[in-house]
Length: 148
Image (cartoon, one colour):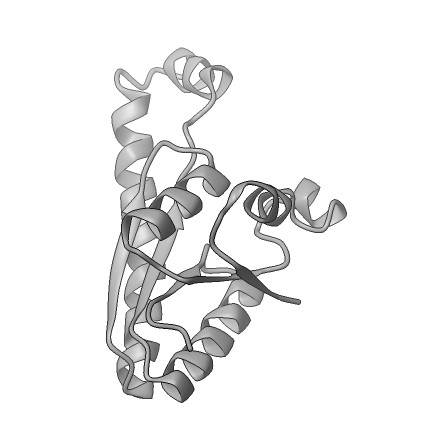
């Protein structure tokens, strides 16, 4: 049925449910998975604030923290895939809008299903049933499975 499943995760508790569900589906249909996590650009306001606090290179600090966080998230997902006996690869997309990064990776990797949680970490998105999910559903040519 599905030949390659993309599972989007931000490391949140709800995203972990999507990881678990996606892995169960992948195992059932004998499909490899690609895990993706996307880190957004840091706002100019935040960079200016950090610079005023005396940080000479706030962007580099942000990139290091984002990469470290992405690694933790993706390593955790890969560990779960290994335990489930599902082949996987991991992708970190830095400095991009999450929905765009998810869609781009799904298309570039030839995925035929996107599995993602109904909303992510950001509080505002929780109020809007996951604006990233809505964008993926509206703009992706790849079918999506939303885990609540």
